[in-house]
Length: 259
Image (cartoon, rainbow, N blue to C red; front, side, top):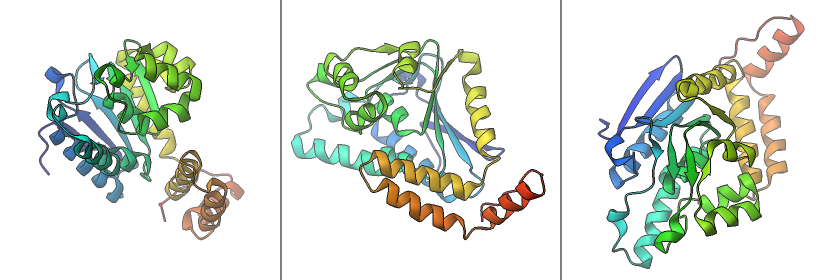
């Protein structure tokens, strides 16, 4: 698929995805969401992809929200379908991916933009970033998982405060409350994400996928313990487990194949 709103590059097993609508502050319109769905599917199906770095073009915005004009005249049924489709194709698809997604938040992450970042497994923000869910100022609520994921990350009280006031928080405050993992300078943003993924690349891919599946099962109200037990057992059937044990006994670095 030829992308009009994304730039996608695979380099050294890392898929770099940039939302490329800088003049629109990288806002999420229908076409961009369609392209994101496609690139997520590509990441999941491509063995060479070990992780994804998702960011926005320029230095002003990661994603400054959704394209409000596209749904300004929707009725209730259309609004529900909009949210459902977004969940399935993009936001849940990222969270349920077997490949780690890192959001490199290079500026404003508002509304659907913050929801996109929260769907990723790890979040890093530049010092100038500001994050928030301003939907109630439009008479709406977050519709792409924001009420759920924000609560999981920062707790009920803080989530209700941020959603109900529509206040933005700085990157420093976001790190303090657990909304993001790290704050770095703009120039260090991508290299910090690469640093994390390069460490992950040294580990067993199937074990990484199993661990992520178990964590997500827990936060989404599924049987996290049961999932962990099942995935733990499956790991014993992998070549990577045998390689990891052999490398440990032989005091050498493991060479995992993802098998």
